[in-house]
Image (tube, rainbow, N blue to C red; front, side):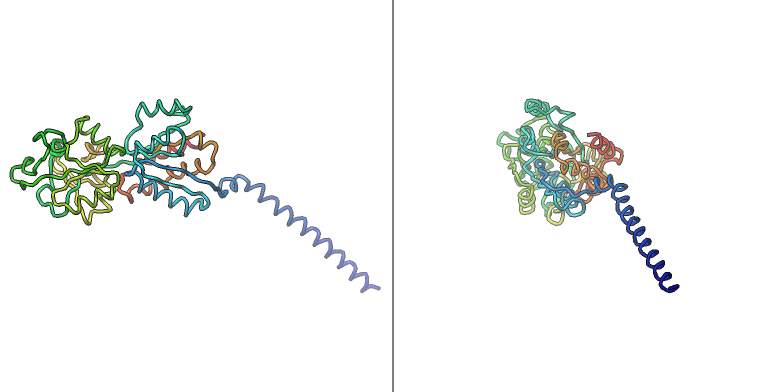
Length: 335
């Protein structure tokens, strides 16, 4: 009988212990879910698309940011990045066809007016973010050993219509008598690109380009044309030069204090290459970002330390100060 009662007591204690353990396990399972609710919301997997188009100059940087985001942050979000050109991208952005419009020049008053005619208030529904700084780069053929250094005035004058003769068949010897008596083949991006607009509107002060200038849509075409013609010269963003410097070379430009080679150490608004430095932008439709979590999340990644700040230099751009990116992050956090 003693053994029976002893076994009965042990059984009762075991059942009681299991019951308590089960109760504690349930409480433990519920507690973390409640405690980590906010964290889970922050780390939730998103899905959907983000549509970006615009500047061909900005394209390599934005495409790299998009790739990193899809691989490391949100694999179920598809970020589609186009390169129609700054003006062409903004034409799509104005009626609301895009989430982002990249531009290698600032948005124009008439484009802001177009946005507002479509119901988007600039500064509220539409936000401007500087991504980085670019240096407009003059490039020549690798076998050109005479025009490796030029003054700013020589560069700009040679591209102006009628500067040397009415038919604009300019010879290298027109620039400097000791240079070859060979016709210069002028190239550059076409009017769809903010790079053309910066060159034409800011640097040339809206003076017509030489009649013989061959303007192209694709930067890869410009690289190919220059690399295959000893008398060619063109201009585009520093990043396209960096990725092709094995087949073309950059002209060192004398702005008054000796020749300056474009580089991440010289490109900047207060640095030696300042005259040919410009900011590049992306414009966000914040109205869409409020409605589509993936758009807002991607916008935050673009201006985060892992976005433009880290990837600018790898794509031929000088990054902005960290405080500027942080200010954009704060702005997005307030949406």
